[in-house]
Image 1: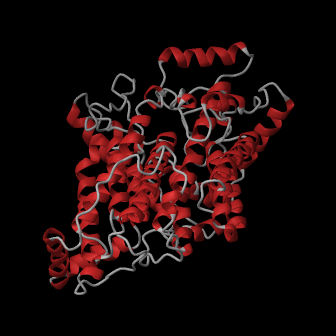
Image 2 (image 1 turned 60 degrees about the vertical axis):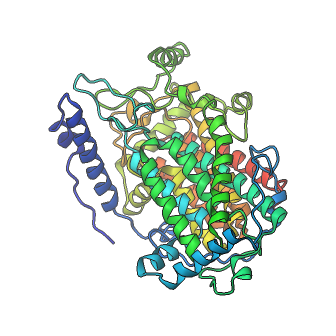
Length: 544
C-alpha cells in the first residue's frame, strides 16, 4: 500500500504560469495534467472488495482462445446496420491465384525472420483486438479528461472541434462525453463484426495454412474462414470512431492500427487481402455511426449563457435554491443540454417520460435530514470510507465512471473467454446502457438544478472534488446501476459482486459529502432500469 501524500496546490502552481499567450496556455495544460495525474496515481487505495476487482490494470492477458466460436454471429441483430451486408465486401480472389499465393509467401517469410519486438507486439494483440481497442479508448479518455483552466479575465475557454490542437485541447472528455464515445465505438465494432461474420460464411476463404502448410498459427485460431479478418474489422471501426471523438490523436491511432495489422499478419491467421477487406469493412460500418453521431445533438449540449440563466430562474421561481458553481471563478455548468442528446435505448420523449420526480425541496424536513447526514459523513471520515471515496472518484485525469466499469467488465470477460464478436456485443450493450444513463441523469440534473450539499451548508467539506453540475441525480449511481444490472446478466456468477460494487460506487458519493441520499438512491434505480433495457435487447438479439 502506498501512503497518503500531501500534494502541491494545483491552483497555485497553475496561477504562477498564467500568461495571456498560447505558449503559456499549452505549458499550463501540460503542467496541470502532470500534477493531476501524479495526484491520482498516489492516492491511497486501501484493501476493499472493489480494489481486488481492478487488479487487472497493467496485467499481461493470455492469448484469447474462445470457448465458443460464434461462427453464426452473422445472423445476430445489429444496432444501426439495417442488414449485415449493408456495407458491400467484394468476393476474394481464388486461393489458387498467383497474387494470393504471394500473400501467403509473405507470411512465411515474416514468420521466418521474426524478431523479439515482433513477438512482443504479437503477444499484446493476441489477447484480443476488441479488448485492446477498448483499453486504447480508455487511455484517450483519461488523457483528455481535464477541464480547461480559466483565462486571465476569469472567463473559461471552450475546446474547439475545428481546432483540436489549440488550448484547451478538444475534447474535454468528461463523463457524459466519455459515455458517448465508449458507446459509439463499442456499438460500431459490434455491427462491423456481425457483418464480418456474415461475409466469412458467405465467401468461406480457408485459413492461410490450409493453402500453404508452411504457415504456422502463432495465436489460437477460431473458425475455419478468414475473409474478412475479424481483428482488422474491429481495428478499422475503432480507428474511425476514435478519430472522430479524438481528432488530435489520428497519427497515434494510425500507429496503433499499423501495429495491430503487423501482429495479425504475422500470426498466420489471415493474409494481407483478408486484413484489407476487414479494415475497409470496419471503416464502412463506422461511417454509418459517424453520420448518426453528427446529428445526435451532442454538439449543442454545452448550452448557452441564456440557457444557464433560464435554468437558474426556473429553480428560483419554484421556490428552490438553484445550483451554482463552487469553483473560483465560477465555471459554466457542464453540458446542461446533454439530456437532449439522442441515445440508443430511449428516445428523447422517453427520457422525459422516465424522468424521476423532483428531489426533496430545500425547505422540507426530508431535505434537512439528508443534509444533516451528509454533514456527519463530512465531519467523521474513516480510513475505510475515505479509501472507498478515492477508489471510485474517477475524476479529472481518469477514464471516468463509465471507463471504470469498462475496466471491470474487461477483466471478467477475459476469464469468460468470449469470442471477439461476443466481446463486442457485450461491450456495446454495456456502453449503450451507460450512454443512455448519462442522458437520463443529465436530463434530471438540469430539470431540477438543485444545489450541492456544501453549497447549502458551508460546514460541509468534501473528501473529493465537487463536480461542476447539479446534484440530483448522482451520475456515479446511475452509471453503476446500469452497468451492474447488465453485467449480472452477462456473467451471472458475478451478479452479487457487481451489485456490491455498484452499491459501493454509489455510496462513495455520500461518503465524499458531495451527494444526498436521494441522489444516489434515485440514480441507482434509474441505472437499474436502463441496464434492464440492455438486458431485454440482449435476450432478443440472437446471441443468447
